[in-house]
Image (cartoon, one colour):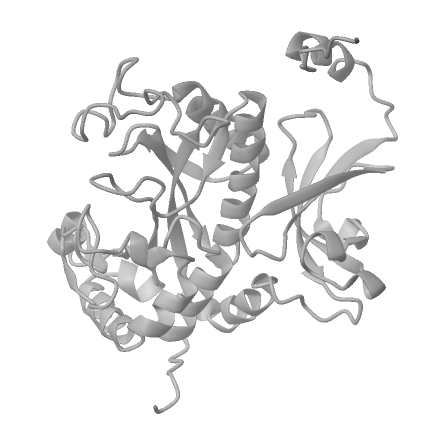
Length: 367
């Protein structure tokens, strides 16, 4: 009787490095095309060779993929298009190699249902005179391969929340290596990452992208998510964007969205901010529909959230739907923070509806 082998395959980064350090021909550049799949949340990617280093997405051709394998097409008509829209430096292959953020299009060259960027870009172009700025605060949770939070006792729980937010120490900052690697990778890639910190729940972290104007905010946030997933992959760790990864007395994960227009940033812009908050309140339900899946599990009125069914606002209040930061209240100008978007939201959909509501005056049909 043959004894079944218990050995499993493994990879060794020191071996990989030998090959990554091989010289690359001058006329060959690796371009990794990245796109959002049919879930509207997950990322896919594949790489091609181009003959020169691109400096603009217009220098790269459209490509295609099997949309029937990503929930974006039928098997009988599966070819789906990738349109390059933004280029970043590749921190994995380095050198002249690039990461390419893409939109997805059906065989008819119409946007796929998961392509929220198309309409977002239209809104940003229409609102360009308002000079909309965004700062996106992406929270996420690190998980072991078994789905339990990274560094937590197996089958058990760590000490209650309290010492972990911005914590320091082996029992408080769980996964700092991944967070710091991600920070440097974002800077190398060209993402305007402005900060990072450990969050309230252990193994949960946050980083901030922005301020960015218009469509750049969502482009850069999606690219930063790709970088995070790839880096965690190298550490054999999973990343969860679930808005409430652990039920009970633990904080959820959001994507708080800081927003301002030119008028808000000018002296006495607080009055424009208050007008914008009134507009956001009127369309509360519509915004919630665009702000991420399963958000009701997070927006309970507890753990620094407002109740999903009730709009609220306040200065320095993290229990509000929309917060006016203390400094903004003091200086009478600046920005507002929409605390409602979930960590798994599509930033194209979020920034799109904020601009349409506040800048373009879009309203819901009469019920």
